[in-house]
Image (tube, rainbow, N blue to C red; front, side):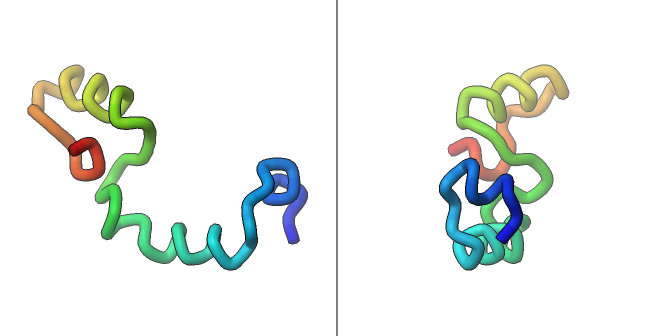
Length: 52
């Protein structure tokens, strides 16, 4: 298992599942709801998928 996953206490299977489904959940961006909203505002759009 990669050291970063051990450091962050993330199971390898969970990480792989998240990566394989990334676009379904986030589309083009990932981050906290607040950060996604800030990024959307800076790009003159109302929201990004995953921000709610």
